[in-house]
Length: 486
Ligand SMILES: *Cc1c(COP(=O)(O)O)cnc(C)c1O
Image (tube, rainbow, N blue to C red):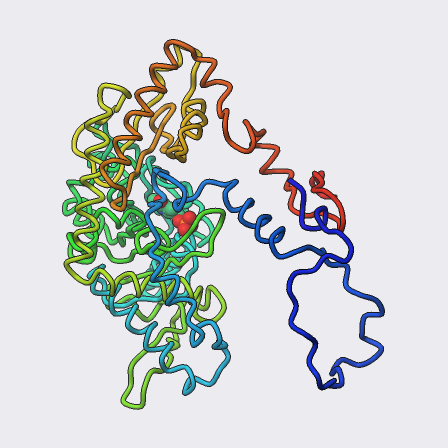
């Protein structure tokens, strides 16, 4: 597709209001002013509109179709939240403004801190981190600071082998060491393996609950008791909170620290790397270590807390403020009981899909699931078809593929998360598409191995696309493929 520069024709214009009558003196010094006109594309309004609408429909999005990308909670992002985040009072305020002028913004942040404390059952919340992974990193810094404050130099963090890849990375970045816990045959934490790994060098257990197989850790009370007895803290990767919202508060079942993915559970547009928000919630005695600044309420209004023992600042100012506005709008829109309904419907939708697909796909752990489940495409290999081919073929049905090849402990994995915002009709369409694709794999596998057939581009060389970014175009030219480093 041609760029705006490629489509530019000299002299073409969109509608322009007549020039202002009074000629104000430019405030930029003469020697710094441009000599000629700017080398910008010239085009009519309609061409411009078509260019951007054309771009917007090339990619798949939740606004375009079903998006069962496991682990990512690609639910509907209410337009109301967008409208509120776009209010001029929010977008027009500057983070360096005097706090007296932005009391409304601070109140909003304070209310969000309080709401998330209520939802998690953990009383102290820091909003600054801007991704789930950064929340994990903060959580590990807090755990480390806690142990160090007690003169304890614990270093080991236990992580189940089903965990998201960010977990071990965050642990290492925080200067701690990872120990992998093998999952039991039921996909849950193996209590014997846990007992064996626990010792007085254990700083924390990092647990995703429900885990990445979509299973609730049914021994959670026992697990948390064991880790506490060994002197460790328990961190919950709360990226899967969509399954628990309004039903289980992690603080009530023994978790000490957790992060939430506001851009998953609390409905903000995400994908392609952000922006996001990964607030961290902790039990009361860990509050002093949280990153700052945080918001407090005083008789004179809202103010900042900067704790002496804080692990420091992890992002500029308030983090991603617009994402925080969207999250609070979403929470207030649903309210207490409404939040519980979200989790109920998310779990129901996942179980509906799983049950209906049992005869079509191989589902290694076919019991009740939470908000997502994992299937294996291994049974298709006898037809020369891989999970990747199934994912590509789904695109031809106007649906995004599930997450593939994760978690690593299921071979040829397909991780399916419908979310609560899909109708039964959409779920049925997905079921029918999967049934047709599996039939095709048996009867005409080349339909899959050469898919997709009706998307703007066919099968890409993904490694090349990731490593050799093609994101700039010289003025007036077509997109060029840059060699790395050039
Ligand atoms: C998405 C996710 C993360 C990471 O969150 P980011 O915002 O992408 O950094 C961590 N753990 C789990 C289980 C997740 O699903």
